[in-house]
Structure formats: structure tokens, C-alpha cells
Image 1 (cartoon, rainbow, N blue to C red):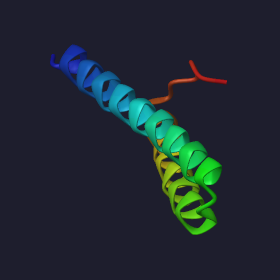
Image 2: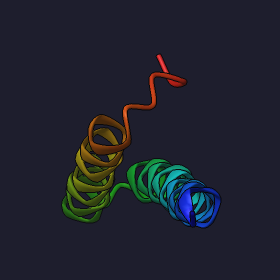
Image 3: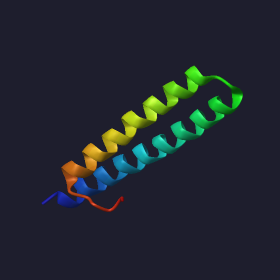
Image 4: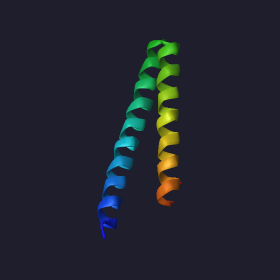
Length: 67
């Protein structure tokens, strides 16, 4: 009965994760350009964790939209 609400919530969560992933990669690029490799590595690791969470969420919902 409330499947549409669940889909909407998952879509919003996926969108937030995608935005967070993009922001972390942009921050990592900026840290690398400044020469702070440790900061760069931390941001890339965080972006990787978000990417794994996205993959887990998509596997759980059966969404094959992203390549």
C-alpha cells in the first residue's frame, strides 16, 4: 500500500548520497591541488565509502539505473 512512499524515500536517500559523493570528490581534487595528499586520501576514502553505500542501496532496491 505504501510502496510509492518507500520508493520516494529511497530515491531521496540515493540523491543525497550521490550529491555527497560528488562533493567529496570535488573536495579531494581541491586538497590534491593544494598539495595535501593526506587530506586528499581521506576524502577519497570517504567518497569510496559513500559509493559502496550507494551500491548496497541499489542492490537492495533492485535499481539498475546507474551504470
